Length: 169
Image (tube, rainbow, N blue to C red; front, side, top):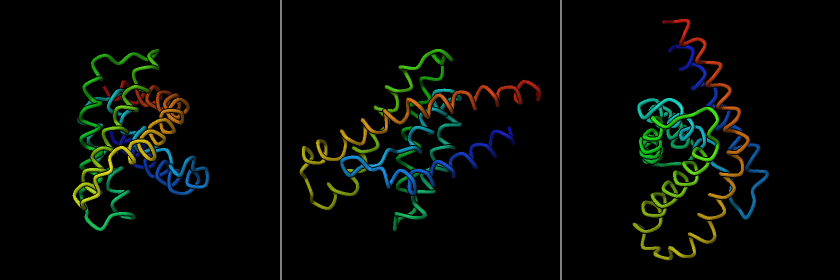
């Protein structure tokens, strides 16, 4: 349990640094893939709702510390996505690669929709079609493409950590 928490803390920080540092140099169509979303969805799919909500809280807190003037908005977004992706934990299978990709796409779409409502719609900017075509769709596609590779790494990390869980029992 403690090892899994340390790995989550360290891994989420590494993904945050990669997302804000390295991948910002490789932006396509002006968007960067959301590596933290991939982590939250993967934790929800592999470990369940509670652990995904904790991962969402941690990942959202990273974003809040650097980019938000109000603490709590981004953790709320990630917690909601983590909670919803955690429902798929009951159907988790090591060989299933399509479900996490679909969950990542749905989670990223929901995240962007919540972002639009809070940061654009409440400020009177109502051009949703522009936001969907210029930001949402490229970001969802880019995040899903990166999640193909990153999910495999997260899956093997989860399988490695399951050994520690079995040893603790």
